[in-house]
Image (cartoon, rainbow, N blue to C red; front, side, top):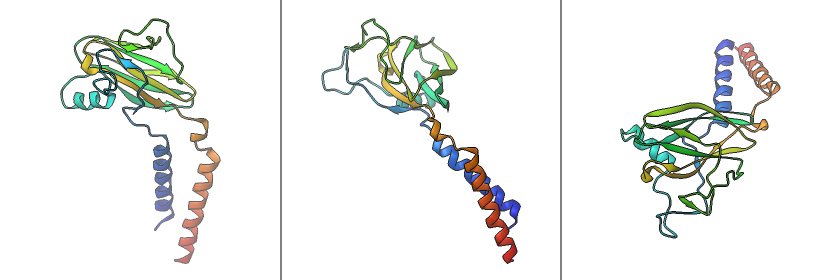
Length: 188
């Protein structure tokens, strides 16, 4: 085994490990809510869909509004909003769990319409929307066209400052691999 091969293998391993630490589910993590949805009996699951189900059905040819993870950075997350279905879709946004807005929600009983959402007209998309947050950004689809498309809060995490490997850590890993490679070479 050459030193070059060993160093390339270690670099690839560091890249894969660091990428895995930052990966977030492409469709977010459903977290739900504690509110009652209009038209849904008390205790019944609400609402009718999830972001993941909307994405999956869209991939199978049934266009449904959904949001996808694009990237995360320290203090921000970038999302892509899709609405290839008929009718307007209004995605509500909640930053770090803080409720915004003062207008009573017509669909989610006991909650308000969260300000700062993303409207996407039929057959369109809104890509690379970046939201600043300390911990996470929640997205909900409760307003817009078809009730069957609605989904409850779905969470997208931002990177914490301790999620980013320090350059010194990567340097130490590289030097350790280089040392191991030199040792193997000398033994041959």
